[in-house]
Length: 283
Image: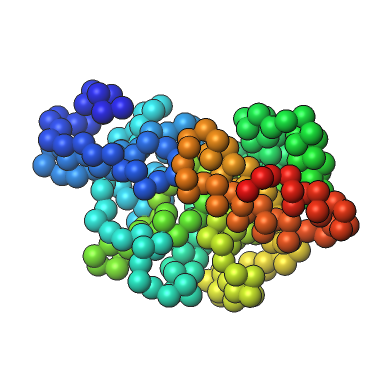
């Protein structure tokens, strides 16, 4: 990876490259070059570039310096992310929702969220046993949101983890990491935000109220939010499960358990089926 960075045309002379290992997805690096510091990230699709460029124009994401089919290079922001901040949870929620609303107002031409496809890919990638696969597909049929109306879709970030919101030394907030971005109902982004940050259910009414106060013309559907919460817990659980198997990351297994248990507690099941699903994974 470092060899590839050295060959990028945006760098005349690189003084230092250090890998950033705190993320959970793509390879990221801090690069000192040309008398400045940059953030370099490997990308898998053009979606991240499209949204990052749009967000940078509106000054809530770092300026994009260079991009190609493999790399996205932006200014490096000296900052603290919300997950490491000393703010209270309520303060973190407020800052994150401001970023979400900014993202939702972007006019980005990107693909629409396809819940069935995402679940199918995650199940196929994880090489589950035949019995696990049947059980998971049956569950998927029960919880996939039935939303075919795209007229209210917005540019969703798709992963507003507190670690993806940066606060610089001047208290300016930035949103980063757009690899999960898609067009979808706002309720999906709200649901994923609640799920991925493991926010208590008792805070959901306040989150809805805050979001609607920032976008007064948007009425959040409680039922749609509930449906997307189940979907978010499901795909997060499958993603962390795959990570725990493929990357041997010790932090992934408890995150998989956390999201799976949240899912099971969020859906209505007969006792026998509940017990079966609760035992599907060996924690």
